Amino acid sequence: MDGKKVKLSLEHISQSYVLNNRAFDAVQDINFDVYDSEFLVLLGPGYCGKTVLLNIISGLEEPVDGTVRLDGEVVKGSDPRIGMVFQKTSLLPWKTVMENVEVGPKMAGVAKEERRKTAQKYIDLVGLQGFEKSYPTQLSGGMKQRVGIARAYTNSPEILLMDEPFGALDAQTRYSMEEEIQKIWQSEKRTIIFVTNNIEEAVYLGDRIVLLTNRPAHVKAIYDIDLPRPRDTVSPEFLRIRKEISDNTDLAL
Amino acid sequence: MSTKNTDIVLSASEQRERRKQILYKILPVVSILLLVALWIAASGGESSSFPSPMDVYDRFLRFMEKPIQKLSLWQHILASLKRVLIALLASWVLGISFGILIGWNKKANALLGPIFTAIRVVPPLAWIPLITIWFGTGEFPKILVVFLGAVMPVVVNTQAGMSNIDQQYLDVGRIFNANKRQMLLDFAIPSALDAIFAGVRTSASAAWMVVLAAEMLGGKSGVGFLITRGMDSGDLPLVLLSMICIGIIGAILAISMQLIERGVCPWTAKKSN
Picture 1 (cartoon, rainbow over the protein chains, first blue to last red):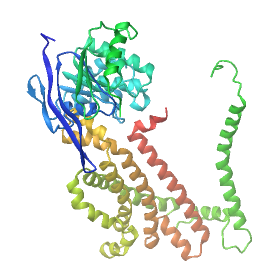
Picture 2: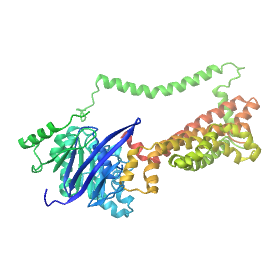
Picture 3: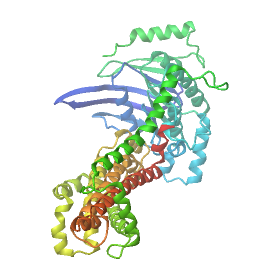
C-alpha cells in the first residue's frame, strides 16, 4: 500500500452502551486507515457493531474513546465531506425523487437551479430518469436504494458510507445493484466504506476488506483483493479468497 | 393474465369475485332502503308520535315557504356551518402551532403540558355557563365553545406526532447538516403530518357535534336551534328533518377533510397505485 494517500483513519475507536444497567462493549480499539478513492469493505457477522462504527465515522454517534481523522484533522460531529447511504434507504416519503436527491445541497443553501442540475446528473447516473416526480412509495426496493445513492452523491461528499445498502433486496436485484455501484464508483471516484455481512459481496466489491470479529468488534484481519474488475464470482481465485475469508469469519450470534 | 387481447374468459373464481363486487355495491343501497322501510313501519298508524318520511318531506316543503325566525333552512344550516368553520380554522392554526411547540420542545412540554392536560379533560360543554356569563349569548361565545371542542384533538394528535418522529428521518437531517429550523420544517413537521391530519379529521366531527349542542342551549339560528324549536313546539317532523340535515352535513364535512388531506399530502394518496 505504499504511495497511497491516507484519507481517513480510525484510531483506537471504542464504543460501549449501558443496557438494563449493564455496560456492554460494541466495538473495541478499532484501528485502520482508508486510502483515497479506495473501495473499502467492512465485513463482519450480523450485529457485530459495523453500523455503530459507521455511525461514529458519520458523526451520528460519539465514541467513548478514540478519534476519527479526515485528511489528518480530527472529525467532530457530522461533516458534509462524509456522506451516508442508509440501510433502510431512509427516503423521505413526503418528498419526490428529485426533492429527496437534492436535500443535501438544499440544506446547505445552494440555489434551486444549481442543486437541481447536480441532482439531475446523479439521477441520470443511477438510471432513474423519468422518475423525478415519483414518490418513494411508488418505487421498488432497488429503485429506492438508487435514490439513496444519488442523494448521497449529490451532496458531493469525499467519503461515502454505505450501511448494508443492499441487505433488504432480493438476490437478483442485489447482484445488479452490486454491479451498478461498482460502475458508479468507477465513473465518479470517491472513497467508499461499504458495510456488509455477505462475504461474496465483499470480495466482489472491495479493494480491501476489513474483517471484524463478533461483538465487541475488533479488527481480525485486513485483506487486499487484487482481482481485476469486474470480478468473476466463480473464478478459482475468487472462490479461494472467498473460502479463506469465510474460514476466518466468526459465526453470527 | 395471459389472455388480455382475446375475449376475456372468466374462471369460476373470477366470476365469484365479480359477483362479490356487485354484491358489495348493492348492499349499502339495501341497508338504506331497509332503514326507510323500518322508519315507515315504526311511524305506521295515524296517531303515531313518530313522523313518517312523508311527514318529514311535507315539513321540508312547508319550511321552504315559511321561514323560522326569518331564516330559511339553508340559512340555518349556513349559520351553523359558519360557526364551525371559523372555530375550525382558529383551532387548526392555534392547535397545530401549540402541538408542535409542546411536541418538539421538551422544556415547553414540561412547562405547558400539565396546564393543557388539566384543561383537556373538561368537556367543552362544561364551559358554556362560564362563557355565557363572561361573553353573553352572541356569536363569539358559541364559536369559542366550538373552538374548545375542536382544538383539543388537534393539539393531542400534533403533539403525539411530533414527539414520536421516526429516528431515521432525523438521522437523514443530521447527516445532511440541517440546521434547527430546517430540522423542524423539512424533517419533523412533514413526518408528523399523518398524525396532525388525524387530529384535523377528529376536530371536524367534534366541532360539528359541539356547535349543535351549543345552539340547542341558546340561540336564534342554526340547526341545533331548529331541533330545540321542534322539541318545544311538539313539531317532531322538524326535529327529524334537522337530524337528517345534521347527518348529511356531518358526512360532507368528513369527506371534505379527506379531500384536504389528499391535497396537502399527495404522497399518501398515491400509495395505492
